[in-house]
Picture 1 (tube, one colour):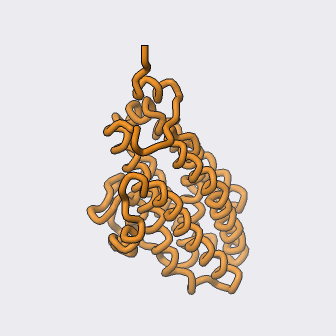
Picture 2 (cartoon, rainbow, N blue to C red):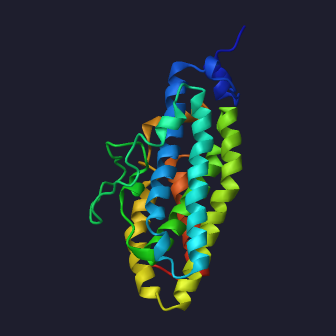
Picture 3 (cartoon, rainbow, N blue to C red):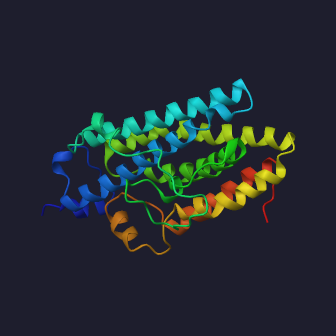
Length: 250
C-alpha cells in the first residue's frame, strides 16, 4: 500500500520539490521561511543604523559585516521561496524594515502588521552597548533555532540553513568579544540595564509555551523541539556567555 505524504513526513521523510508538497505543509513552510527572512532583514536594518556608533574601526567593520551577512542569509532563503512563486527582487523593498515601536512598548510574542518578523525586532536599539547586548542574546537564540531548522524536512531549505548556521554563530562570538571589551571600559552598569531590557524580549521570540501548532509542525518535519525546550537551551547558553564576560544578571 502506498504511503501518504503526511505519513512519509511523520516518519522522517524529506521533500525536495515545491510541486509535490501538500497545501498545509506549503503554508507552514512558507510561514517559517517568511519569519526568518523578515527577521533577518529587519535585524540588519536596525543594526545598520548603529554602525557609526561603533567606538572604533574594528567594531564598525564587525557591525557592517553582520549587516551584510544577515542580508545575504535572507537572500539565501528567499531563493528557496522563489520555488513557491515569491518575487525575491521585489520582496526586499516591500516592507518597512526600519520600522520600530517605542522603546517602552511591550507586545509579548505579537508580531506587527507590517511583516512577519519576530516581535523582538520591533524594538529599537539605543546606542552601541545596547546593540551589542541585543546581538549577543539574539545571536544565542538564533543558534538554538538554527539547530532545529538545519534538519527541516524540506531539503533545499535545510541546506540553506546549514550554510547560514556557522556564520550566525560567528555573529554571537563577535558580540561576546564586543561585550568583553565594553566590560573592560567600565560599561558594566549600562550592560546590565540592557540585559534587563532585552532578555525577556528575546525569550519571547521562542513563542508561547505549549503551542498548539508545535505537534502539527513536528509531524511535518518542520520542528524537532518544543518552544519550551528551545527557550530553556537558549537561556542556558545566554547565561553562560554572560558569565564568560563576567556578568551575572540578577
